[in-house]
Each structure stands twice: as structure tokens, then as C-alpha cells.
Amino acid sequence: MSGWVVPWHPSPAGRPTLVCAPPGGSGCNRFRGWQARLGLAVSVVGVQLPGRENRFAEEHPATFADAVAAVAADLAELRAGAPLVIVGESFGGLLAYELARATGPDALVLAATEPPGNRSAAEHLVIDEQILRDLFVSGPPELRDLDEDSQEFLLDVLRRDDKLADTHVLADKFQVDCPIHAWSGDLDAVVPGHLLDGWAGYSTAGTTRRSFAGSHTFLTDLADETVPALGSLLC
Image 1 (cartoon, one colour):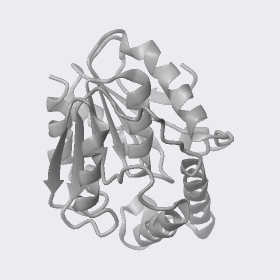
Image 2 (tube, one colour; image 1 turned 90 degrees about the vertical axis):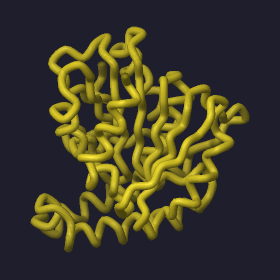
Image 3 (cartoon, one colour; image 1 turned 180 degrees about the vertical axis):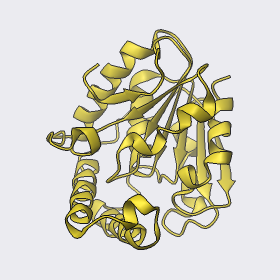
Image 4 (spheres, helix red, strand yellow; image 1 turned 60 degrees about the vertical axis):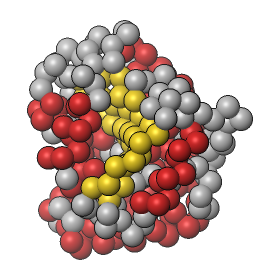
């Protein structure tokens, strides 16, 4: 593997695998604790794009398609025919969707993610920047305690991710062949639940909807609920 995915299981190859794609501006370490929650029968893997966390010195990929191809190649080394579920949050949901088209998982979970093309990249950037700035004030300690330079670094990563998303091109054959589980937060003012209804036409195997009592970041905020729900899809 070349670093595009980060497995937290000591022996991940060939195990049922949960692949987690983070939101824009974030790295995959937000999912690290999910391995302990699910136990060693399952392998939890994070998607790690360049420009953040352990890859902070690396250049962003030129296009969304380049990123998808690189992640898919790394995943191929781990899967070995075992069950695979991919989950993505917001920007990570778009990445998860394209990974599902490339890898054919058993299920795709899209959290707080609009279908492609609902809004312009510029609209997303304004919204995403405000979310991150709010987290610098009222989010977890690791964000509240950042100095100005560190905050600006994360904002720059977010801007680059939005620019990368702007290179996404919806394929003519855009449907995935696995079930889609479209999850929303009841209190999400950024991506209200009704917007996720649009995923209904993106799967040949059906789409289900589920709402959680949380905000735009419910996927990690409500891990006591969301992680067991994800684990059940691997059984």
C-alpha cells in the first residue's frame, strides 16, 4: 500500500472491512477509535488524502479521479474477497460514492452528503469554512486549542479539498450495484435530510434512509449509535 488508506487492525488483510472517508479539511484519525469499538473481527480503514496529518507535506492530487484511483488500488490489496462497507461524511461521501463505483462494496453509507451537482463548489466552500470556524470556537479540545497558524493550515486543506471536489465528473453510468444507506442528522442545517432523498436513483440495489438526532457532524458525534449500525452491515 502507498499510504492512501490507513488500516488500524494489526492484521487487516482478508477481514470484513469498514472503509471510512472523512469530511473536507479532515484526516482519517477521527475514525481511529472505531477499531476498538468494533473489535478485531472487523478491520477499520481510514482514507487519507495527501496534505493532512501524516501526509501533510505531500501535494494534493490533481483531480478527483486521480484520488479515487489511488485509494481503490490500495484497497484492492486489503480486500481479498472479504465483505466491504464504505462510509463517507460530507466531502468524504462523494469520495465514498466514487470508491463504491470503483470497488463494488457490499454496502455504501453516505452521511450528511448531497448527491453530486446539488450545489456549486463555491457554495460548499462558504458553508464548510463556517462549520470549521465554528469548531475552532466550540468543537473538541484538539480544535479549540489550535493557534492561528494551525487553524489557517486546516482551512487551506479544506479549500484544496473543495477545489478537488470541483473536478468531479459524474459518469454516464453513475449507479452503484450495492445498497446505499443515506444517513442524515435531524439538526443538520447544512445538508437537511430531504436533500439525501436524491440518492434514491443512484443504486441498482435500492436506497434506504435513516435519520439521527444530531447535527452535520452526527457520524462521529453519535458514534455510540452510528458505529454499531455500520458494524451490522458487515455481518
